[in-house]
Length: 225
Ligand SMILES: CC(C)(COP(=O)(O)OP(=O)(O)OC[C@H]1O[C@@H](n2cnc3c(N)ncnc32)[C@H](O)[C@@H]1OP(=O)(O)O)[C@@H](O)C(=O)NCCC(=O)NCCS
Image (cartoon, rainbow, N blue to C red; front, side, top):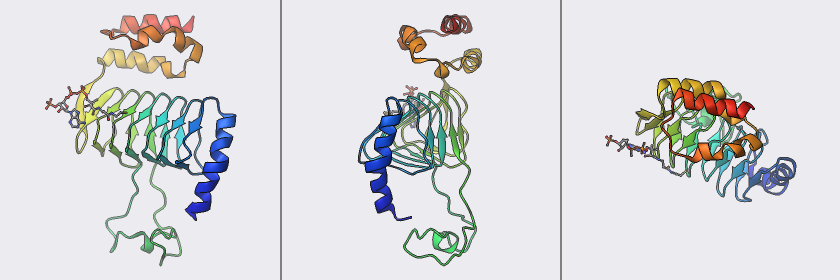
């Protein structure tokens, strides 16, 4: 693919069409998103971000990182210089160079007449996930709802919902809530609520609280009335 006209198409056509069609969508001109990307309301794509073959849920924003071959839920925060969906080069061939197994002329030449090792499985990221600055997430992993990935982490295994992981390779630091509260949050799916309801609940969302199942249930009931 010739990236120069394609990048210009994003900057001058697609980016502006999305901003006109999708409520609250905004992308800085100095970004790129491939034609396969799908966006939702209130996505914000900050300067320097690069998105390929990815889907973002509503209110998710990406700072100047790379998001490739990924499906990301709603209310996610993707920190600066995060790289999600790392590329894959087979390590058990004579050479790891794509010129031998990919038709993409990554280095301007290819010896291959077919793509022998097509795209790796997608990264699947849930809702309300915070990915810290400079974190790397390997292709094909699942990051559960509510998870936090620490700055600089290299994530090589799936991340459980509402867990906090950090380090190289990323390891569990703690869970954000107790098991029963996590279960209750996952059955509530607050991230699907309407903007009006979320506005009504803002004080609960922004207060520090020792969350219990009963408190979450009360909030859940309030969100349904
Ligand atoms: C992961 C994070 C949220 C954890 O915060 P926390 O729960 O307050 O954790 P603590 O500071 O109590 O640290 C707990 C342990 O994890 C370690 N730790 C915390 N963050 C770490 C990180 N990013 N990498 C490696 N280890 C980390 C601490 O050293 C500590 O280890 P110890 O118990 O052996 O002393 C936070 O450290 C972080 O990385 N935030 C991301 C910030 C960022 O990228 N912002 C960009 C703006 S979007």
